[in-house]
Length: 127
Image (cartoon, rainbow, N blue to C red; front, side, top):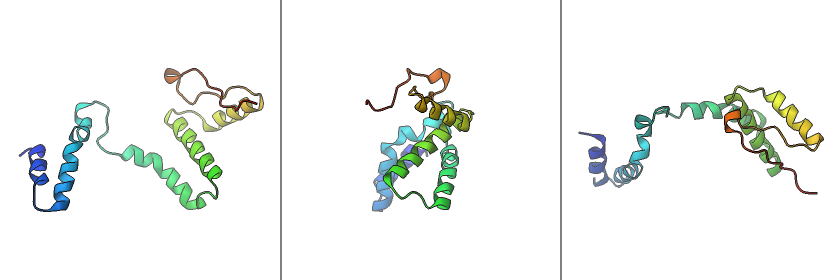
């Protein structure tokens, strides 16, 4: 019996939790099989788990932040670090260039790769 038929059968079974799960899976069935039909889509979330691991370890070791501003800073820096590492770019060079640009009232370097580059946006507030 194929999975669709089993889910359909489970959606009308007597156990309310099982039936609800099967109905939910049927609603998202096409998305569940994307990895079969779309080349390059990983069937697991291992890459996402690996990307989050350093963040979890940092949070556990540092006990997080004490303010909204601190949380915002950490969120942004961890995004920058993860993005640059995925692109195999040097984090310290990027952060240094970003700080130098801010000191000279210039646009920051792009976090996008060359193929994704869009026009640079100056994020400074108008004076």
